[in-house]
Amino acid sequence: MSPLSKHAARGLIALTGLLIVAGCSRGLLTAPETEALPTPPAAPSAQDTLAPPPNRLATPSGLISRTLSNLSALDWVQVCQVLVRRDEQKLVAASRYSLQFEKGSLASDAMITIKEYDPDVLDFQLGPHGTQFPVPVELSIDFKGTAADPGAAISDGCEPVLHWLNDRTNRWEEVPGRTDWANRRHIVRLEHFSRYVVGGKAGWKQRPPRSDGN
Image 1 (cartoon, helix red, strand yellow):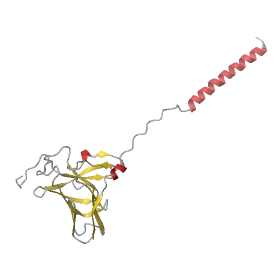
Image 2: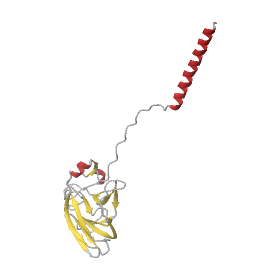
Image 3: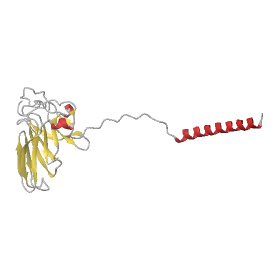
Image 4: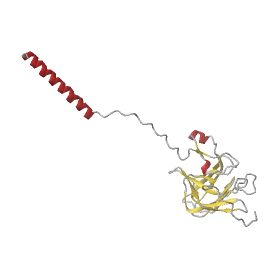
């Protein structure tokens, strides 16, 4: 082999080696391309909810996720606005709801509000939203004419249970209470204000015995 051919062969071998090293180096330093993962749908906000149709007892299990604009379409109506002072005992009532404040229930004077979008749906807001009560406030709810009223045409034998909407978890939580069947009222003691709905647990309870003979 001539000296020129030897030099050409060596050059070709060297060039091939450089290409191999360059290819390996790129493979080690460049991350493999991946397909973009689909973005998961955003969780609904705490207020991003719509209640069941009217003329039925509202139930958390029947709530449907909606957009905030659809929620505003519910057209909440303020049915009460009353100033309550921290050192007074006062009853605030409107529509189906009454609130009994005791002395010390409020840490400071507050303008108490009650909002609803349909007087036949037990889904309501009490304000100022988030107000805490050192002394609980008694809430009484009139459920006449709803599915929990044994005298109503739409009665299904259910027992009323109050739930509040937890803004942090976006879940409905039960508020312990008692039922005055004689006067068709459900009564609870509130430690704070929020949005509330009257419904049932997992399946309605059977109608309990009543002393009023119904």
